[in-house]
Amino acid sequence: MADYKEIVSKYKDIPGGLIEAYHALQKEYNYIPEEAIEVAAQVFGIPKAKAYGVASFYSYFKIGKRGQYIIRMCESAPCHVAGADQVLKTLESCLGIKAGETTADGKFTLELTECVGQCQATPVITINSKPYGDLYPEKISAILGECK
Amino acid sequence: MAEEMRILMRNYGKIDPLNIDDYLNAGGYKSLEKARSMSQKDLIEEVRKSGLRGRGGAGFNTGMKWNFSYSAVADQKYVICNADEGEPGTYKDRLIMENDPQSVLEGMAICGYAIGSNQGYIYCRGEYPYVVEILNTAIQQAKEKGVLGDFNIEVRMGAGAYVCGEESALIESIEGHRGEPRFKPPFPPVIGLWGKPTIVNNVETFANIPVILEKGADWYAGIGSKSYPGTKLMTLTGDIVKRTFIEVPTDITIRQLIYDFGGGIPEGKKFKAVQIGGTSGGFIPETLLDTLIDFDSMAAIGATLGSGAVFVMDETRDIVDVTNRITKFFEHESCGKCSPCREGTKRMHEIVDKINNGLGSATDLDLLGRLGTVMSKACLCGLGQAAPSPVLTTLQHFRSEYSNKL
Ligand SMILES: Cc1cc2nc3c(=O)[nH]c(=O)nc-3n(C[C@H](O)[C@H](O)[C@H](O)COP(=O)(O)O)c2cc1C
Ligand code: SF4
Ligand code: FES
Image (tube, rainbow over all chains, first blue to last red):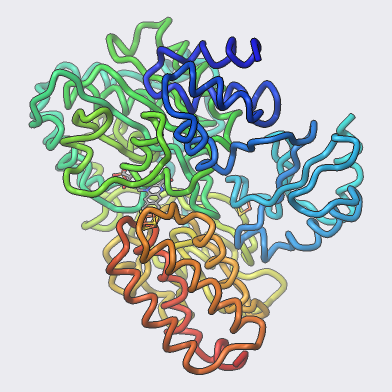
């Protein structure tokens, strides 16, 4: 709890700082812990429902635990026609999870996303926001291997 | 082979974006100096006269917009650079910020002087943390050199909501709220961030400003189409030989774009459709490829120039399947504030999905057409108003693809 307060308080005096505080929390934990939202509500002096409402509005923020590596597969139209489906299937079978799930060891979370702005290299995934492009199924295991 | 015209990207590959000295040696910040030697009125008139229209999609004359904020009386005004770039198939603003960040800062500072603002924000999408780092470095260097004077710039990060690219939703988000669009009027240039006059311009719009001042409004107005002068940065995706970016004057045709600049369709396949302007853009068939890409010519055929994304589909592509994917996008991104969009995007996806799975009937096609028409008129913001466009234009130009699935 103390940690959450320390992180959130840094943004208390910045106008509109709540969203910046959430970014800082997610940078630290890879997700936004539920209790951290209550702490944020206290620090910013707003109702808990409002603090929760802001966090849940934005799809980049995830409330509740996620893995160490967040893999996001772009499913926007340009990636879709470039073969995103096959890449997704390969990811799902390599990791043994479906999109939206986290591996049992807590290492990987697989998610779907809309365009991540790397469309010169469709289809694209990001791992902890770093983009990997021009993918095809055979490339996946090597990329996952980089995640130690 | 048609030639690109690199005005915005004049420094691409020539300067180190993380070294402000390179930008200064290339003539950087001379335009800000020049702007500050002019009266605010003359400066705004120069920008207006150049004919520059916003590159974020709405195509409003930039000088005229600035004039609204200049004329508004207030103790504080703001300049916001819209770097939310959420339109699928678009990455032009990222290219500008990654390769020439100082040109954006300079454009913002010129706007700040013009309207009387000392505070700017760059709202950069959350998916671009590496761009945020570049921007912060650039701002730091500009501060150390003192080139910005008393104009301060802060970067704020978006968090994966497409609707936050809409200027009033973006403002809500900077204020720390859910990014839901506001009712308009009042418009941001008069009542914007924290209730103060606020200019929101796109990254590409700001990046055009320094060169307009350097070379003059008349020079700029003479490039490309008369009604939408200058160059446009376009990103080519889908079934096209060169999946890359290009900067072209606005008086070329869609056909030139795809065949002369993009190298045509790969593997000798035939062209089927192109969607321009991002995911909310209309689908364009072969018969309309000789249309000019400028804002008004595109609007005349029921399409948009939008963000400048060019998504090409060859003869093997399933139009209904792609449209289905797009309707899912809008269902997901609708913010839910108004019911025509909240309900409409949901039903639209439902119906297209049903047709795509072979379960639709002829009445569904009529229903789609009617739903789309209502949404384009009744929705509160541009998201809901433009969401039906891919459906309506594919129904218009590729109806047989729907019929074949019934
Ligand atoms: C749903 C929606 C998303 C938008 N996304 C963006 C965006 O990502 N970037 C942008 O510059 N403008 C976007 N716009 C347009 C902005 O509302 C606004 O018109 C623009 O930032 C004004 O800048 P300009 O005059 O320089 O084009 C969007 C509009 C809508 C309705
Ligand atoms: S049109 Fe859609 S995105 Fe825009 S305000 Fe209404 S619900 Fe929100
Ligand atoms: S469409 Fe997938 S990265 Fe842009």
